[in-house]
Length: 260
Length: 260
Image 1 (cartoon, rainbow over the protein chains, first blue to last red):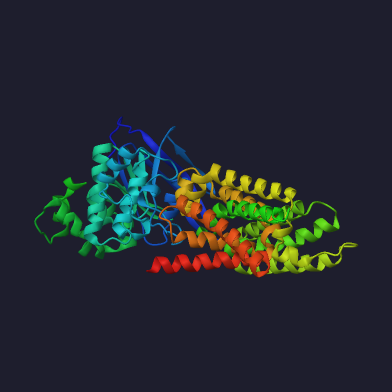
Image 2: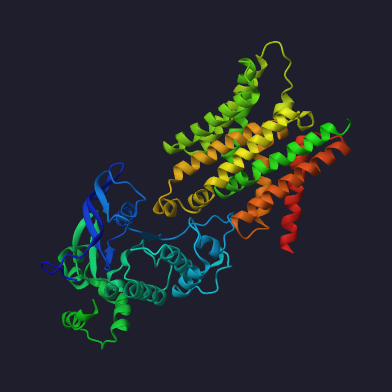
């Protein structure tokens, strides 16, 4: 969403001048980012560019060396990790997992499980779920706290492409129905294009940011990802937009600007 | 009364089961088996120091076990490898304890009572220590239950929920020192870790949720104590090792039954 003059959306979470180092390695270099009410902000960047570190800092998991994170007072964040390394020695049903650390009303749990598409799995062992079901269980756990902001770290790791598209459609639907803001990490811009309002491209520092189409055409983005990433992974965009096929890239882009 | 010492021994064994059940479950979930072993080995140094300085053995054991557990935690946090750190500290403390105990003047110390326990010689004051310690450990874990469980499941999820995993680790470390001090009289330093791990590992096979596993660990621990005592009495075998053999037998039975 381009910001209009005088139209100041309420900022839920703001990181200012965030710097994080592991030994000699500067993972985050003076990164500033903010998430506003009801928006879907996607963070992209190559492997090892500090995406997860930024997510961890904003979610309150890691402490930056300098810079500060400001949250709107009373902000509730729902955090969905990239994956869950579950110890096989720990018996845990989905129902018990959803009640950690705080217990929730059974009817509320049933409702959120319906919404996230894991109806009827409440007595299953968490470790027996498929990758997609596990991601949905993690999402359900985050949603149970009625968050104002969802923070998702590469939530579709381990999903196949239809599963991935499906998951992002769900995220978009949640934003539309519950008004929850979303800050998520993705490894590929094209997969999340139509589900994002705004994109930040990170390579230890913020390379560029803006609407998905602005970022895709930005020289900084092209320098990181090259021009060749348009092909196969544009699948979701095509399906989602119900578009005709067009091989002229620039015309194509214009034709799909309504998607963002 | 002929049976009096047997009643005290049985009460001591059941008290121990309540101490090791909840903590042992966390030891199994968090892969702290060697950590528990090392802390228990350090207890023999605590015994020697307590005898040398004429302080109660329980106090000496508690303090040395706590020092040991905190040292290991601290060294690992500094980046030392866990297994090597444990190997060095555990065996050094055991050896130093055995050397120090030989310098205790005057008294002839029955070393095997500290290495393998002397449950049949448990007095009423020992029972107070055992049940008091067990109550303390149970209360501590019950109080922190949800936070401990979340931190065990995933440190990231815990931190995102505002839980400090280091503080929860400290709670378990404290509980471990108490258990070591309590279990010394019953099974001795060399077999404390066995009582932490075997009942909980057996309980894993019977449980679908963490709470059930803790309950089973307590039941199996108590059954092991009573069965071991009975075997020890009828076969004239050493009591501490008999209790561990009984626990191992229950573990095998549970695993075989679950396989069928």
